[in-house]
Length: 418
Image 1 (spheres, one colour):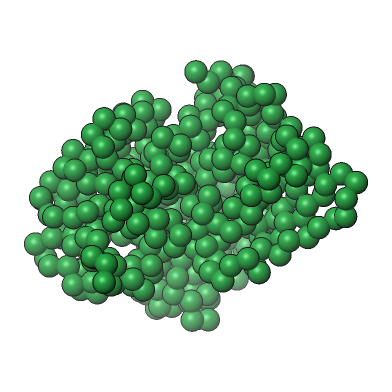
Image 2: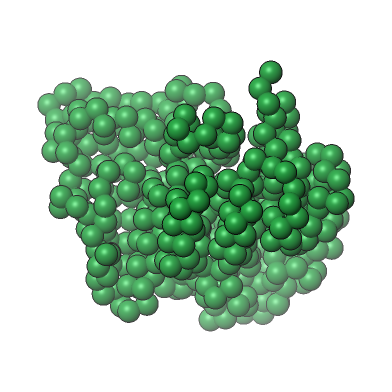
């Protein structure tokens, strides 16, 4: 029987909740030996479930890493603005990391984490889970086979569902750039990372446009209240907290995003929380400032052109991509799990990704595969286990997003990447 890998977990919110599912089903391989979360009730609940002693539980992640607990690695899922200090503290105490994206909020911080990891032999796996999905792995396989020739142009889009926008980026933790990161980094560094991986080129320059067009006082219906549960439109508004939280709980749901509002999201607990929680505020009266739509233009090595659109005005989530190459093209929709392949002069081919694997939970099946790779890395070392999202590969996506935000702020001017 293989040795259990001892792991610390910092930040026990919704992202950790997805990884906790993997831990629950692999207790022979993984033992949680230390936890940290600012929410004490959530901390106690996970400690009790996984048998972590009180002496190994902390409300501050840095305190956890400084406690000297024997562990093989640490998973960091704290808030974006804490990633840099948490990662540096953990590495200075010798822990290998699985680090939730974004790596950090500034380019120099990303570089500092990368360089420290390389200089001290620390493995840092970044949670760019899309590389691990059967959907994108199949697209990568087709491109690398050479059957469509050399990639020339890529069009990609992330459809952010309208209620997801309201939950995370209007009412939620990622609503303000100064408190976290710009939406293009918080949400779309997944996309810039996957585009880099698919085309296999480095980015030379970036331009971007975007704004917060909606979700302001000017858009509030006449006579609307400050909070959803006291509003005349509570049963009709598409952003109603009652509809998206309480009514979903009445159907038996207890998962994300309901468990972000309260850990045990019963209808009664949600109704109480929404009286005071930011998630119960009118979406037109929040203090949000991140964009609700943005476009990126990337000019890559070897004259490859990429355009990417992120928009929150959608009823359907998922990513779409159209890859145009010298001998054919690929069009794929992750929401439908369908890839269409057209080689010029050949028969049209449709690939049903749902038949390529059996596990598609958590970012299209990426979460479990990423965590499995991390555990293998801890057990076998870098010389044996090659991860897809090593820090050295992942930071370029962040440089692109930060350059894109710089471009957007300055009216779309071109930013050249060093």
